[in-house]
Amino acid sequence: MMMEFIDVPQQFAPAFGPAVYTMLGQADGNLIDVIVRNDDTNEILGAKRFIDSGEMTVNVAVYLRRCLDPVPVEGDGFGFIVPTGRSVRASVEVGELVSESRLFTAAVENLPGNGGMDCMPRNRTLAFDEWDEIAFRVDRQARCVVQAISEAGPFEIGTFEWEGGPCVCLFRVNGWKIAEILQTSECSLESYRQLIIDLTIDGKPISFSYGLHKPVPGSFRLGWLNRYGGIDYYSFPPLNTERVAAEKQRYLGPTGYRTSGTAEERRYVLDSGYLPEAVLRALSGVVGSPRVWRIRENGPSDVDVLTESMTVRSPEMNRLVLEVRESNVVNLQTF
Image (cartoon, rainbow, N blue to C red; front, side, top):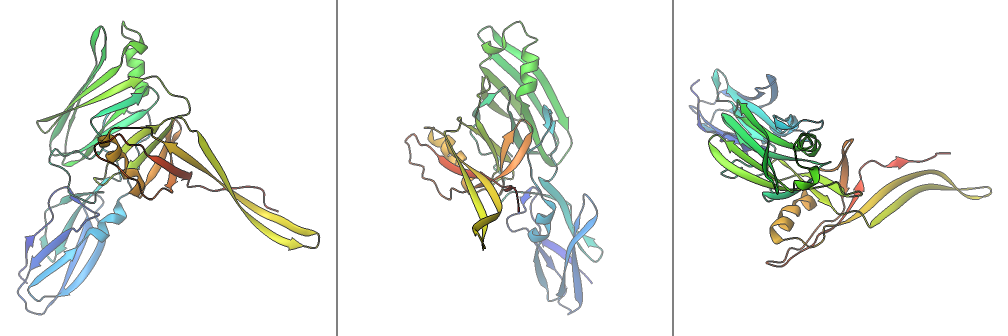
């Protein structure tokens, strides 16, 4: 049996888009099994049987998606991290013929040319009790220089280096750790207003700027999976509307209506305030994202976004009003 691959997905192809392999055989009518294998675990993800009729195609995306589970990175890490659940390496076997291993991401479209996996603008804000992440693809190596700027000038927080790949990597920006380091400098923590992050990924430079500020009590920070398979973050101003909804199980007894059980859910109305168009367009991704989390000091928790549409008018200042609810329902006393 003579077989060859005539078309395979590119490296870092999206697993939530088509991931099609095309094989060419001899059209001899033999049965052919095409096996999809997870190269990270050596597990067989799926198989498809063909009758050799010459050219055959198989879309492996449906097998790959089961391996992906993107979630925010927890802990007190600061620097480069290779997150789990954001990508999977796989290959296709046809008899003794094996394709090159490819890395597939949790994206729905191809990554941009700079390899970035976030949608928020490069000018951001960060409180000293928050974290953010800069996710990207890397083939060989990455380097990052982090500086904080005060009126007295720049203060170098650290230089970070990473080698390996190809893989999905991220640089975790940890406000707590940054505050600890800045408190060792000669200037007060409040004097530092800006954080500069200069990344070099496989020789290509990219810079980010964060406006630093003290924690805002009551702010509501969300994280959500974006279309590139990264996780974006944004902090909404303190809440001004909170709703409590209850679902009751009632029955009519000898003495009248009674409640046998109650489930309670909490809903929050978030108002971004007026923001530039670029920020609102990136923020609109939370409306359609299949995974959204509330980010708190003790870790992320799932939330359900109830708002299903938003309008962004160009080039005006816009605002987003968003209603979300906790995914977990609290069951109260049951009688």
